[in-house]
Amino acid sequence: MEKEAAVQSLTDTLAKFTAYIGKRLPTDVKEKQAELRAKETNPMAIEIFDVMAENQDAADKLDRPSCQDTGVIQYFIQAGSSFPLLGELESILEGATRGATEIGPLRHNAVESFVEKNTGTNTGSKIPWLDWEILPGEDYAIIDVYMAGGGCTLPGASTVLMPGQGYEGVAEFVLDVMTSRGLNACPPLLVGVGVSTSAETAARLSKKAILKPVNARNANEQAALLEDLLTDGINDLGIGPQGLTGDNTVMGVNIESSARHPSTIGVAVSTGCWAHRRGQIKVNADLSYEIISHQDVQL
Amino acid sequence: MKKVLKTPISAQDLEDLKVGDVVYLDGTLVTCRDVAHRRLIEYGQELPVDIAGGAIFHAGPIVREKDDGSYEMVSIGPTTSMRMEKFEREFIEKTGVRLIIGKGGMGPETAAGCQEHKAVHAVFPGGCAVVAATKVEAIEGAEWKDLGMPETLWINRVKGFGPLIISIDTHGNNIFEINKKTYNERKSSVLEKISEQVKFIK
Ligand code: SF4
Image 1 (cartoon, rainbow over the protein chains, first blue to last red):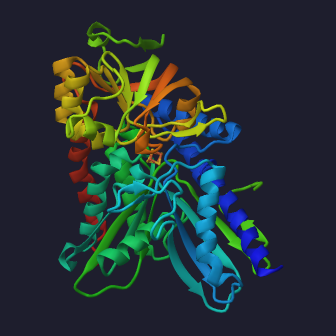
Image 2 (image 1 turned 180 degrees about the horizontal axis):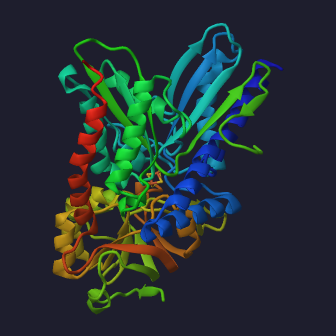
Image 3 (image 1 turned 90 degrees about the horizontal axis):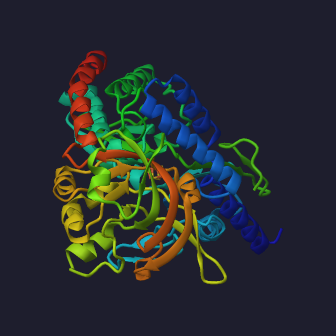
């Protein structure tokens, strides 16, 4: 394929995929919600779970974005160093965002800071937001698309604790987020926690944590224990779907961590709402692709 | 039986409603969020729509403009109501709005406004935007379009719009404030339980 044609073709694929994830939830998220609905005992919560399920069916049938807030588009890229369109990927993803905005249609959610004007295209300075990781020697790329809605972005928080506050301080930080802005972020939430060296490294990891499957379990036993304790602990608060009480407040808690300075514990929380619109696609060197996050997709 | 409110809504219509009740709306529902509140309260601009006895929706929808210039509601769900807390008490006083629909709770100022001027705040389940869009029969107008799609005042004719869960009633009750107390009370015992098991730094 000529390079120009290849760029066009990948832009089209990723535009369609980006629009698609606004309409249908990832398979793991859908299954999790059905599981939580089945376990729920609170009548108000059950009614809300049922409206949510009805909404996803309607979105599917009418081929429309399931939540009106289709967010700011973010791409998390793991690109092979030999991926043939590595240098073009940034402009491809910008094109994909513009394309998805028309196909969706997606709401216009990019306001240029200080200029205070909505660009009307979902693109703007550094938007779509790109996060890069290079896979040495590989020739494929794995791209996670995420729609960062306003409500689920608002609880985002990060701070640096002193080692004396320990993991107890980490737990407290997470719980405080849940009982304040977390309530309004459309629970049941997928809660991402970053434990790292500084405010921004923890923040990035907390976001990566909500891109992992809802049932992901940290490989480190102590981290996995904290995931479980936080999941049960937050559910015990009784916040419930939409913050209107119920047994199930989270779809899961995922922790990502890095090594850190001995004098600091950077901690951050990112939340994904029940309409957790993320998608993962693997693009091979010949531009054939495989959708990992959703089953039975026709783009 | 489903309880249905019809616009124009009177103070009497709301008198018996309590927090936690579920109602549906028939009539006119106008989207109204951040900048519209700011224009009215901070800049003293008149709202271009009369919403006395009416209903507003804290929402920024996706709307499709058809070839004949009319509009189709694609997706419309509530946005976080708390962002309007700063303005809502005065907003209720100035406009005479009776029903405020949004997502999540609002604070003591709005609750006071609801009690003083007989209005209620209700929650429509967030993210259920297609269900909501199917309850919009027609978009009858659009004002302040200069604000862009999410902030435009979209004037909708709705039928059976809900479920709407009353979160602030006309008697000063606020379900989120009541719940928040419970959540915060439980938090300390939850934290204690977790803390015992995560003393990893030794
Ligand atoms: S928090 Fe999520 S589901 Fe709720 S309105 Fe925002 S984007 Fe939609």
